[in-house]
Length: 279
Image (cartoon, rainbow, N blue to C red):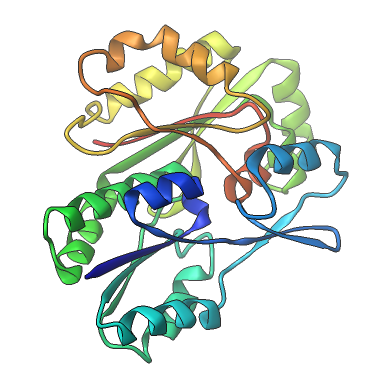
């Protein structure tokens, strides 16, 4: 049997992971001296409640080689093979941890997704689809590495505050941007978060998001796609979906929607909307 392991940075719920038959390993989130397990002892809503109230940004910790090793041991001793997907190696040390642990076990393949949150998630969904179609572990890992460069992930931010607090932009740039109502769009390119564009106001931001999707060549609806949001509710995402209903109508059934957790939420803050798809 092929087992699929992934870190909670992919923002699958535990219910979705069970449905996909995927093992979800929680990342540790630390607020001050308090530690939580992402998605286990800290829900996305609880995370944003703490983020909004906190004067200091939380930080996340990579999954340890020991934790990966315990799972690799359990499955390989049962005669299973393992495909382990991790957050981008340029944003987290989890990939290196998984590689270190995999050295001790035959039949474990580690894939650097070069993606985050729902960009990582659609690769997980593709892996589950390939497994269910009878593809072996080597075939799954090879296809994921071929397809990861086709993943497009775009996030429309509501505020520059958290980029400023995280040191990614200067206070002066953040102040000027907020004064002008700038809504930046970020993307992931070669495993790193980059600025893809910026617009004045939410309406122009939604229009920019659509233009950037079109610029990639559009969404490949034969492969997994996903939507996500940060914050306490999904109202901005629902508005985006209503405004862009024609983009998705007739192509897919119900699009998976995820509450984006601590891994990316720490840096973008609440009220961000996100789309991920294969070009």
